[in-house]
Image 1 (cartoon, rainbow, N blue to C red):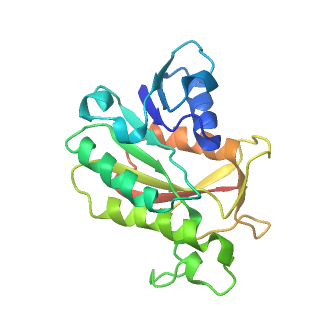
Image 2: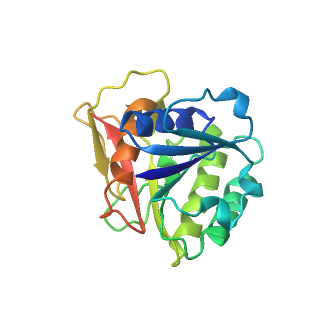
Length: 210
């Protein structure tokens, strides 16, 4: 499997890149600064900003994984996904997007999201709305095979890889401890599992640690 990883230098991108390489896949890592990513077997590092990519850059891949993240200029979330959707139109690759947990539904009617609940932390509301906008753009896209993958609500960077996780659907779930919690490393493993399974198509998924 040939995988392109966009924003591969970020926290999530690095771990997803590492997981894909460990599985023996061929990886092209698109980064803004190639000096921050060490060369490895089966890894091609391409120094190019997402907004500099064109249709040809993303041809020939089985899977493209978008690990874009931004906390300052939140408008870039929607701008970057609109740009990628445009240049990926007609591309047969599966397009996986690192999402946010705040847009997961809290009920069967899908009328309330996690971000709509009174206890949702106000300091995360801005970036949560921005990542939800990304999902809205994808839902209105018919020409690409997208999958939006939400991490757990409590997403822990320095927690170890356990291999114990669950891939969930549109609705918020917790583990046996009543937590929506998990490590970046387990999320990366789940993302590569989703990348290799074509049954996931034009839908939003989630991941929680067990």
